[in-house]
Length: 474
Image (tube, rainbow, N blue to C red):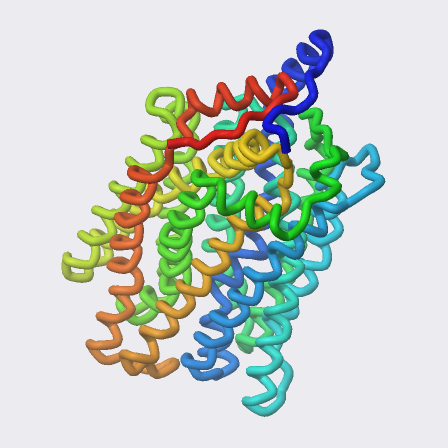
């Protein structure tokens, strides 16, 4: 690489810049958010209810469930680069674009596998454990081929900073909207059936169908507007060493990866333990949809403030502020004696505060994809996002180990009255771990993320002009 791409004629530069900064219609931005809405109806079920299903319904030991989640998530993490590389290597791209067809086809397969994960044949315990391993590994692989092209799509829709922050908002709104609906509706649907096996099965079918519809709305209404020259000699010769270079020379990406280990493990631990906390610490599992409704309903309102907050404070400071507020609320929730009212207030504050940096993160990811191209001269959306998604999968494995591990260590007994040690353990996983994790994430973002909005605008100008520069972001 010689450090500078061939110059683009002036007229073409103007056209490219215009396309890169095109203002998307609100319809397209909202429909992009429907992708994560559909995603949530399949992904969130596994994070929030699969632990409960396997332990209390299928009677798989909690230690075995912890192992299933930990192994399969790590397996999925290593499958992400393979999926990203396969997507980046697509040739003969048609009028539907590079990412949308892969996303749509994979989402249908993912829906089928989502339903199968909530299906357990009447076999030996060893057979059940092996079935759970196999089906969840398959689910994770297909999820990679669904989520990576969906996330990569944002980077080729626009390079405009404000547009990306608005897309991050609609994406997070879609995600929280799915959590809100599944959090309110899933358990009541399950309880409509005398057999919990039937209840979980029917509820998963309903949610999976809605999930595919969400992806369909995104597929039909979103398009790739940013002109990207993909068949350069450098990209054709890209090797595994180039992928390592893309990831490990991208300091902003490495920072987002490290931060995500803590933010996503905090969020997923909260989601997995909520049903246990309501059933045992609050004494009524039927409270779970009510708490989720309040918590996630307020989050929908909170994330609508993201564009305004980003405009006032920038993405970095907005994210750090949310992380610090969430940290304080969660730790306070652990210290205060368990009370339904204080718990709901503080868990809601913590969740709303976390939803804001989680939403901003999607704009961060699009920025680091462009930074990678600017810094290395090679554009690989799939592999760059796969590196980020790797951290999400590891974070999910951490959450599974924390959630199921605490149940094991504190003597949890399925469908029984729990002792005080177990109740304290459930509360610690629900509040203390997320609080500490968000505090660490804020520290990481503050000290190590140097890709400010002003810096990115300069990078976007360079890319729009058809060039890159070697350099570092301090």
